[in-house]
Length: 468
Image (cartoon, rainbow, N blue to C red; front, side, top):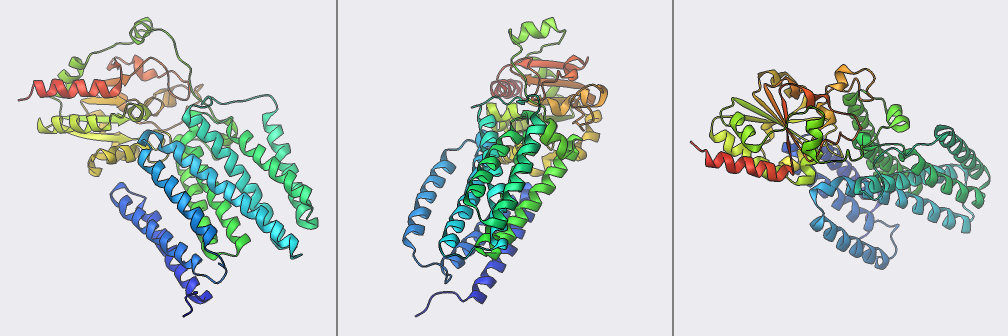
């Protein structure tokens, strides 16, 4: 009995998969529907893989089966061991795989068609697009991974003539693509590939930690276009559709995030700003020298236990300390006292889009208590306590008040309008933009130094000890 799918049935299966991927993207737009979106995406991928494996173009399953088994074992192991704080660098690593896959498919296709003397201008144009986009995605994602993982500095790496060098590499890569497309010269293909790898690195190294969420989103878009280029090479309609979906959605998300930062994509790619160094000295001594007020856990408890409303602003420091579960317990203690507790999320808080939402969802914090910047900003002026947990640039008034600041014009969470602001910080170091936070010096602001998780657990213990 013939089990191979006819092209028509395979196309129908691909169409069903494409619809499921669209529903997946729709589901991922809100935390409440994200789980359902993931299920749609997984179902779509299962159908797509099954339809591809049962197509007439597949002649031997042994190598495919071995590769899929190895990949599944590695993927399951990584998924079980990965910490939520490391999710951004995992995403960057996965983007690099897509980029390298596009490069390898293009090179393999070229060698196969060259041996069969089946090269033509259209195919070589498709191969050029796959190689260039894939190579840029690969090295760009590797650099992003290294910055996020701390293997290399998160600060921008800049040098004289950097933009001119990038422009020269880009122009030369395009010329080589034209040469390859018209002559099929293998030296042009290899040199084009090498230059694209270099360009991916030189484009990302000047981008610092403050812009990393946009970079992750942008690389996601690149990986989509790499997949689409591979789809044209392999004449696979589903890869083209899915690649375009990922490419456009990543580009739109990057645009939205740049608008939230009041920065353009061009500004991010070519003028990224970075991360700070250690300010040195003990936190308390440095604070005293700069006229910043420090506070204790007891001070925060005194304000919060009888407050009407508390708004918590999480940042990457919360992720590092893994303090989300302690925050959930603190929220429950305050709710039991009749205190209204909300969480305020800035679009670029953390290291990737939705980073804070994922962490809070992991702690089972109700979605209706997690508000985006536009929803929550008007509530700070009626808030008794704003508790900033490891965030920095996203609450810095310099974005509104200091025209010379590199973050000027970026919309912020207006935590400073609350009656009392408590910052949970390890030290006086500024945020990833390297800009000093003017909120530290406001009359209604106090800093509680130490590990965020330990501090919050101290607040929870004190609240339990003063229970009504």
